[in-house]
Image (cartoon, rainbow, N blue to C red; front, top):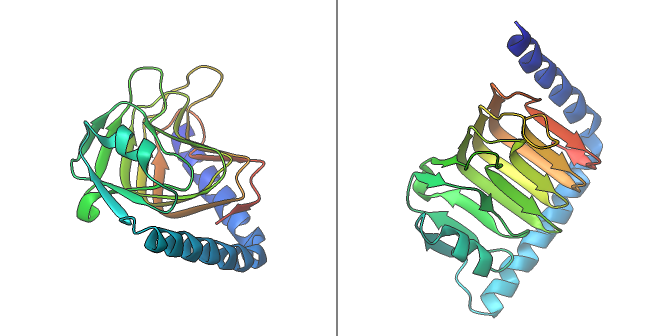
Length: 193
């Protein structure tokens, strides 16, 4: 019963926030489109590949060396550990295949901290602690993302997705269920779409 209530509360909260941000959404979309164009133009000028392939063994190294605007595409469907995404770098499962992230005990599944615009797609985070996906300070778009089974850990109650101090957060085809805390918790975030 409490799980259903949490899920309904999340949907109501998300609907209210979405309606409240209606006018802001168009102006932030314009800004993000301009920022994406600038990053793409910069990559083209520097003759840098827009996409980089990674395996689970090389994923964190590829993310750490990627430039803002680059997308790291993981070829495998499983990853053990926490994925740390530098702000401005994108991550996606290869050809739309879902990457299942299982963090070590007591750890979040995916984190992104700092200023920049990042996109994450085709990811499933299972059984994280504290927060399944922890976003602090960066604008983030999640697309085709599932977060489930997040447990309380440290000072965090086990939110599926925790967004803090972000200019913009977008959720497209996102499911965050069966977590100890809220499905989505947005704190000091300017725009939630």
